[in-house]
Image 1 (cartoon, one colour):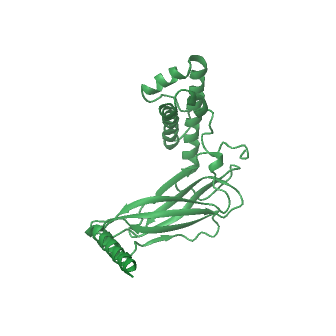
Image 2 (cartoon, helix red, strand yellow; image 1 turned 60 degrees about the horizontal axis):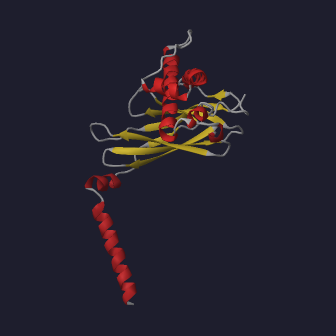
Length: 246
């Protein structure tokens, strides 16, 4: 009986301590109703989408957005939008994501989740957000969606930059060695001319791809040394470079 009573007292003390550790701001956040978050009904979409909001503090909340592949083909990239329904004619926010490798593709019946953070307005009111699937790219190169976010153009430019940088870096390694490449990359951003005939957005994505490959190689060198450079330059740039794709 004594040990049982002691256990109960310890549980009560732990609960009281946990309650005391919650800040006043968190207590106010926990008492607030969930932010008004919805998802657009899209019966034709190859991805379903759900969004779960959660208050972090009195003025900040997280939304965990999850997509599920309900198609019969793997997905290599997708884009979602969020619209603030409380502001008439407001622009949608875009989220574009490509899977990092063929083994990471979103296969049928699998899910992928990402968090987004939001704040309340000057009156401490949360925005009325609605999420939707905007664009889907499959492993065979086909696509779906209205592509409000211009995800296809962004991905095409980004991948061209990644491939262009990878080709240049491989050439430097073959001619001068891995250390020479690292010495060049440490000096700063690499300048590679974008091919003509593309939009400003495509060129910006191209430059991001070049810088992304530079960052990838430097990180591989810093974490695992020179032997990792050849391995890094042999990796697919993302899930679009997969044998089953094209």
